[in-house]
Image (cartoon, rainbow, N blue to C red; front, top):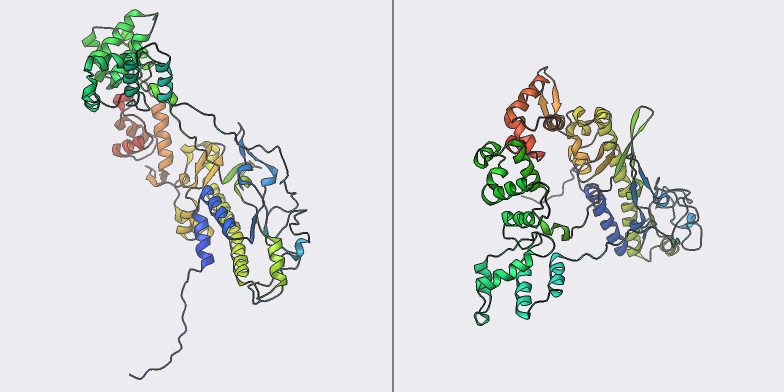
Length: 501
């Protein structure tokens, strides 16, 4: 076959670097977005951030409204804040805007007085404030082991006993329980020390007399018995003795809430059993929990829902919106030396892309959030029981977007509402049929199930079949297995464990 040249015309879809960056930013959470911008600021000198992420504190009042610092506001792109002159010249000269595209990567079409700034117009900078309200650092908290070792140091005992107690404290977990058995602990000790089980047990009993009460126990029964024994001057000695009998011999029946067998075995009345149960419930099964260190996790909403003139309006949370702009000094240098700094020209284009994509990200979040609110108006007025069924396709068709785009927007994005803070995915739910031929949201079904369980008689709790029958009377066609699945998803105990005296 003779080689030849052919010309063909066709269409294909290509993911440009700018589009890839836009999709990446759209899927990111607020924390990931700030990390991405921080990395971009390190790599690209053409980009500036005017706000301080640590200073964009968010406070939520008791009424559910959200307030943020004024200097974290952020508005339309293309506007420069008053007094924003980083290079000593006017912002109008920061980026050239001749028509067409020059050799150094500038794109025309912008006025000479317009800057590539993603900031609030007319807002003065707040860089020189010395009294900023930065978050307070957490105080130093001692661990359970340190607390116990401090009590060992204060005890008048021999060096050998102190060493054994220190050895046992190292084997106590964060919950306050001794993690290893006596045989394992004795096997780990050198044979030349000649430590026997009685000596190690005496050291453990000393530790079990320490604060917090119940520390050093080997199981839940021993932990509760230690606390029950430490009670002084109990008002009801009979209930105290009955509680001790339950912990020693019938803890499994109490855990299963088999009150009938407990009454028959212990030969007691309901009042006596109820008093003993209340005494046991007042004990702490995790004595070391007070010394556990855990970092609190805070969710900062991306959008806020407010009611204005009988309508629900969505607003962006300005505290999470970065204030970005192109560096004026480098832009002027690049303008005066066209064609000489190809690296800076590429970085300038990347900075413009990032500013534009960040703006587009928040605009898409706002559009999707408003569409969700428009479809779920009943939820904001009446709560979760009024949630209607909603799928990603409905929002995508309403906004002329792809379902994957809506999925990216609703992932790890949060909405502050009068009913609480929810992830955007919370407002999407599957359809559950009704006897009238309509459909109800699974979220509404969960809310109804929770209301039924909260209002039930604790002495005669509702089974899953009873709940399914009650839902059927309200018009919801729900099977017993579906009720059990929804109940487990809400971490609600089964009927046997919800029973009370």
